[in-house]
View 1 (cartoon, rainbow, N blue to C red):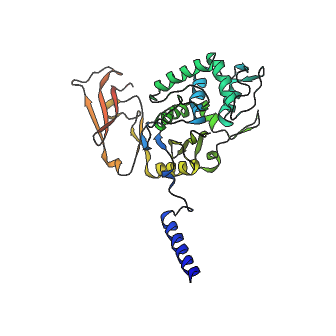
View 2: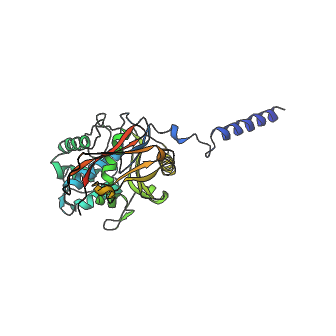
View 3: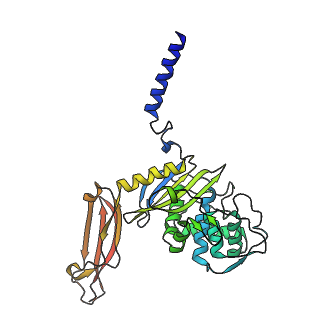
Amino acid sequence: MKKTINRAVLLALLVLCAALFPSGGRADAATEAKAECVLEVSSRRLLHEKNAETNLPMASTTKVLTAILIIDECDPDELVTIPKEAEGTEGSSVYLRAGEVYSVRDLLYGLMLRSGNDCAVALAIYHSGSVEAFAREMNEKAACLGAEHSYFVNPHGLPDKRHYTTARDLALISAYAIENDFFREIVSCKFYEPRGWKNKNKMLWEYDGAIGVKTGFTLSAGRCLVTCAERDGMRVVCVVLSCPEMYERTAELLDGAFQNYSLKQLCDSSDRTDGLSVRYDFFYPLTAEEEGLVRVERSLFDPLPKTPGEIAGSVKIFLENDLIFSQNLYIMIP
């Protein structure tokens, strides 16, 4: 009788677990990430966030900023003599040796595909003369990109209580980086033939439309992942910090973004209505419900100027009551 009762209790518990945790016996991965942020790249519109302004360590996702700072300011074909400070850097490594010569390009691939901490140190010293000086440059760059709640003390992300970011800041840095063709070429590369380096980022193989960007892990930061994916012309960056099932959660967040939003052109520089034009196209991610809430307002000078190229007024685009775009209107140039 006792065995029958135990089996009945066990069966009831299994049924309850199946109802509460339908995805393979685990809780929703949304509860597992300390911080998340999803944004559309061209508009920088936030599509999802959770604890996105919480200061957290970010491990090797630090290298997104390291890489784009180097790319912006260094020639990839320049040669770097590996300094003694880079040899033996703890953590992930491509096993550089002092005195060896690598190109900046090689070191960037080692940095982003193999997460080489030694590559990070070599690039930092090559750029700024020291890790400390490079970290100052990193902080200045981050601030320029709107990442105002981050602080960097090294180029690789090894643990330091003074080294932190937020999911939103890291998304902004990554959105800027992914707009660079060379950065995109590096982080989307599955295998770097010249050095025989395979990319550690599983998203490149497992998620349709994945472009990159960077994995990260330390005991203090947990599992961190920055991903960019593109579908139907819309690029989306996703950041998860301290997320045990980072690949699964990232896929969920990206799926949600692509299912719920599509990129719409709201301003067309080729439009010549009334002999007036704008100079820039404008695209914005919208849900199906939001498409009916977009409002365009044009304000024209009276009288209108007659000289081609002169400012004739302005156009403003609102999503409900929020201004999302503003640009001058010009007299059309024939």
